[in-house]
Amino acid sequence: MGGIGSGRGFQGGKITTSNMLALDARKLHRKGLLVPGRTFDMHWKLNGENQAAIQIQVEFDYVILNYRYPIDNGAWQSMEDRIYFEWTDCHFGGQRVWFRCPQEGCGRRTAIVYGDSRFLCRHCHKLVYACQREKDDYRPIRQADAIRKQLGWPNGIANLEGGKPKGMHWRTFYKLKARYDTHANEAWALIELRLIQMEQRLLRKGIS
Image 1 (tube, rainbow, N blue to C red):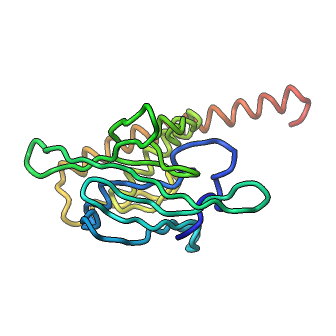
Image 2 (cartoon, rainbow, N blue to C red):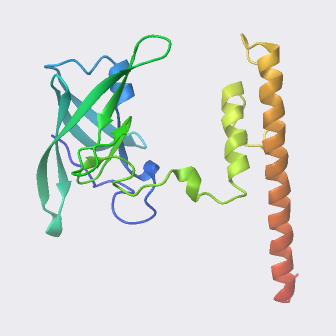
């Protein structure tokens, strides 16, 4: 049974989904772990080092989480939480799994529960997605980098563009390239605007 809450982002600061431990029912299903009677450990790492771990026991329609979290004076509190899950049919066959938020009065169906002292849905933890907190001039950079990743290009709009990845259809490539150009051009325009505003502030302060 591992500890929860001793790593970066679990105490104070901006609370976004990226600051929390995420337990994704879909990933557990894809790995074949949601089998009644199975017990396994889940680990979270930061820079290659373990930051937190829990033990998960799978029953017919719920999982039992065993973990510890820090309380006052450096002490740790043991926790056992039960989270129910259910299945829904997909339109093109197969099934999708969902957690039910264990918070009393919620029970919201969610693919991911986020943990600190308890694993709850995003709404009960009052979390926002990281992209909701980013500055307007960062969003097109993030969007451009996401496309560069799809194309196998080096990260960063200042780097040279690459070619079409092997196996990708030209139509798909041109579509992604057009979207990339839109985001990259918007990012450069915003960066230029930010530099102009910075220069104007320095001039107002009498610095050139």
